[in-house]
Image (cartoon, rainbow, N blue to C red; front, side):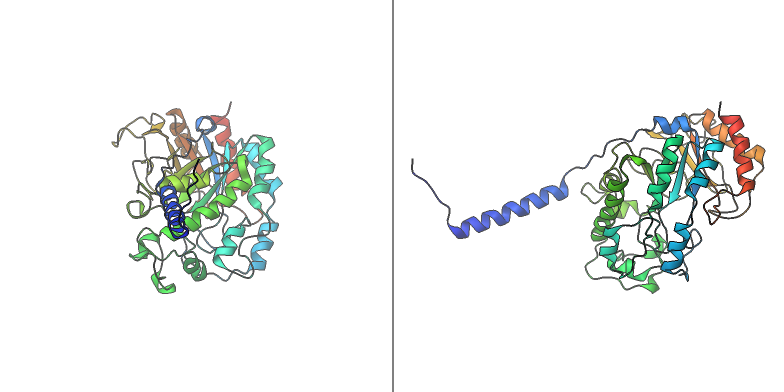
Length: 366
């Protein structure tokens, strides 16, 4: 049989267009992350949230934190002491913040370090999430994490290196545009940033595997610009990065304070449900209702609020009676509620909040 050979120049064109087609196909491929298991979450009824940060929650001013001081704080976090407290009150799960606006994170991440380019990492040496998960797992308490949808707004180098400089009004992300320079070539969707951010999340998720059962993503406010797109990066690829190490992990994206509570993305497993001064009584097809029903367009109904004066600080802002009654109200209608508790520097729950949690255990745990 006669053999045919392709001209070298034609062969090079064939390889070039094949590669380009493959890359384009991968870029536009549908990503459908598996649905997370929410049955355990519903059965857990309620859990605890810590804003354990280098700067106060939601603050936008740069702080005087040093890398050495941050590592000292993380190393001094008493994981076993907190685990015993959570076991005592029978918390169903525990959330902790990976970081927020300061750019200091409580778990190492080589991808973040490579992309941001600091000679000395702003991520802690200790993997506090892994240590917490190891202490909580034998006690039957599931580990969950909080992360942001954008780069740390107090850290200019991180913002610019990660290419989180939108060509639109960055104040809609909570950024002060005066502290950074818009990087050339950044598109409206911030495609490069989203891919960078997903790769950072992917590293954490693969490392923790099935020891982390859920993610709560803050600041997903510009959904129509950044995430609601048929092609990745989008909500689905973001969720896939979080689920890389645990397909059963639950994810949600916070649209901000919304009452009634809404489902923000089709791929959400549970609602972010951030509430502050208004306490919703339920959800029914987008209207006020006396019942919750346990789901919002397929997502597990969940609310998150603070028990102190604000996120991560203050004294109890309500009576024990209101605290226990509202928790039970949500639970009795199939919903889940997470209470933010101000942590002590050593990672313990303050006694005045612990007393309220003991009362909650009596009325919600059999």
